[in-house]
Image (cartoon, each protein chain N blue to C red):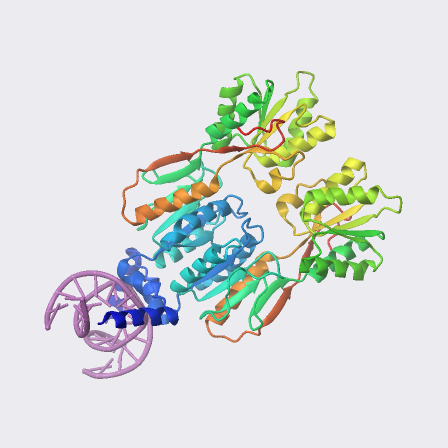
Length: 303
Length: 303
DNA sequence: CTGAAAGCGCTTACAG
DNA sequence: CTGAAAGCGCTTACAG
């Protein structure tokens, strides 16, 4: 075949938009260039940033992502897993809302690699999660850097592993005697906690670290309604950097970002590595959080 | 082959968990039982409920969904579209945030059917969107049913088609002389609009229809801070039924739900029909909205 | 009714 | 280096 012919073939191929059939290719190569993302997070607050990272990392490798939202339905979960296996996914990323809960479907002993993120995985597999202790340390130290000494931690339900991790780190930095209030993941719990605290006689806190941004929003609103100025009198830090909330609090919220997109990116690259037969050290990987400084602590230098 | 043998084959097949390779099957049938969902909605507030509907409708047909978030990047969009076509998707659902904007990628003349949702599509294709006028009518009529007569509409930027549709419907029901305030999709615009209105001398409104739930949240907070009681003195209705916002306003927000999941379901069934070669009438399909009654209007009967 | 062959669109290994 | 053949895992149409 002359060079000229080869060139012409290539040219014509691209002119008529020839694209090889990935199904046929997959049949030979035993690779579908497809992975599945399984999640029980219906609302998508965690899943979407994570998914964006996964997709971002894998699109360059020609890998596409099946998204399967299975809520907490084991039957639905099984159907989706079977559908993915039938389609010969190269791997599965299982994501959840709680690191101390399993998805309602058994993913051990599958023929494809599974990587876990924000959900409890198997002993022999890789699990990604944020470093809650480090994130909480960042937040608490920031309050202290802002000159706050009487600290309070208002957070979610104590049963959550992440809640305990964050609370422990808070106590380690702020001092064991500093109070922690466990409650719900809601604005109204933020309100209630402020009411309780300010209706007592003793010293009021001058720095509050909240377990998530919704609680922080409730806290800031409650303080404003009591006439307590944020950040002049009390500094507030949140957790999640859920921008739609953090940007709209008055003042905008300084908060901890779990770097979900980066976490997704790493999870994606890890399934890919496993799918290609590369060796990956099993175990839990904790990724560092980042403090996002807005105006709710009164300092505007960066951390 | 004896019946007994046939039975044994089937039994063993299911025992060892035999599952046919969908790639090989797809090669013959020219169907991959796969569709692509393209979106430029990074945050996922619209995409996820819609995706849930698509997936819900198609999982029974053995169809899995590739999710591709392309932001507003034409190059990224093209890469994702090419990847989906290589993988022989049976069809594509293109979704966006605005019915009067196109995605940054050209989907006409593809070899597979395309269905649009909340984004501008081609003349010959099917496009789904919510019936903004009907939703706004529902909201405005509800305010009137609650006995409100001095109505105000605080909404988003006038350039949005949906904003104009809702505003026109509001005027049709409330009367042409009732005021409409165009602004931004934010809580702070809700605040600002209340400040402006209450600082004037003339009659104050007793019913406010907001263009989305975030504006409504700002409006309700601003009214509370002015000492105006909701719903005793003023009724407020939102739009979107974004539960995380609507449930946490004080009082909880009566609002219009666009039924995104149902819309997703129909979009899913429509691409499937087209993929199977069935004839589908092209054009725009407007799906009805539903009023969700909470406590911000003061009436607790259902609509 | 049963069983072998052809073929879907590629890639890989091999013969010329 | 070039070109034809074999084969990935199925299904469909056809011969026995």
